[in-house]
Structure formats: C-alpha cells, structure tokens
Length: 171
Image 1 (cartoon, rainbow, N blue to C red):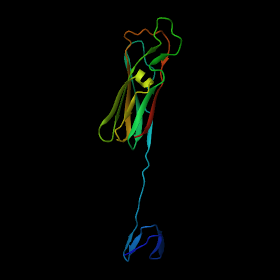
Image 2: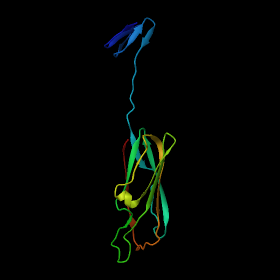
Image 3: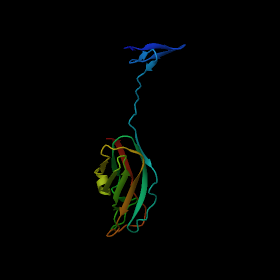
Image 4: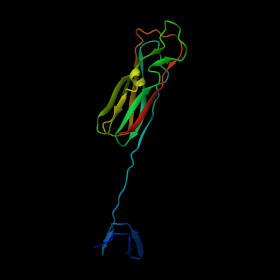
C-alpha cells in the first residue's frame, strides 16, 4: 500500500480524485481519513411568560424557558428592582415593593436536574448563580416559579413590576 504525505491523485476507472493528506490506496482498496467538528452552542429563550399576577394576597406564578445547550453552562439570574416594585410614588405608610422567592429547575442530559432557589434581593445583589456541573441540556424546558407572601406588607393600589434577566455562559 502506498501512502502520500501531500495531496494525491487517485484514478479509479476513468475518474480521478484529488485526496487530502493522509490518503492511501491499494489495487482494490481506497482509504480516506474524515474528520468533523461540532461547535459549542447554547441558547435560552422564553417559553411561557409569567403574565400579570395578583399581588393583593400571597401567591405564585410560573413561567417556562426553552434551553438548548450542547455543553455545560451556568446561568446568572438577576432582578432589576429586587422585588415587585411600585411604578409610582407610594404614599406614606405603604411599602414600595414586595419581595419574592425565585425557583428554577431544568432537566439535564445526565439525568439530573439543575435547581436553584433565590430571593429577589439575592438576585438584585447578583448572588443567584447556578451551574449545570458540566452537563448539557439539549432541547429542554426549564420551570421558573415566583412566589410571594403579602403577610405583614401594606401595598398601595397601583402597578408593581420587576425585570428578571438570565445571563448564560459556557461552563
């Protein structure tokens, strides 16, 4: 069998093929080395949003996230306001915001679940970082749950909101 260190031309019947480095051929055999690459990819998008919630009493709201990461990753969940914040100037004696708890759960390819519980104040101070432990999560749906307790809180009538941002990066 002849081996070539540079591209070679092999004639088979009436056809000629230019083969890359590492080709070899014999009278009745042709061997060609083949290699491929899979690039790292990770994306997260909203599945179902939280929508409007009733803050008059304790409660919860659920949303979903579509996750497609073919490598390990981590997510940093952040809160702009650190709770449901009043979109108006609150009268004296009323609370300007309502804190909440955030729970995130996502199935991973290794059979485990990435899970993290944080408070809205932890998310405001950038302390809600979670990682997949190097595992991928391909085409999975994550569950986001917000829950709040109005006991001991006096909220004025009006609109309250917060913005939750999830920043992901490769492991």
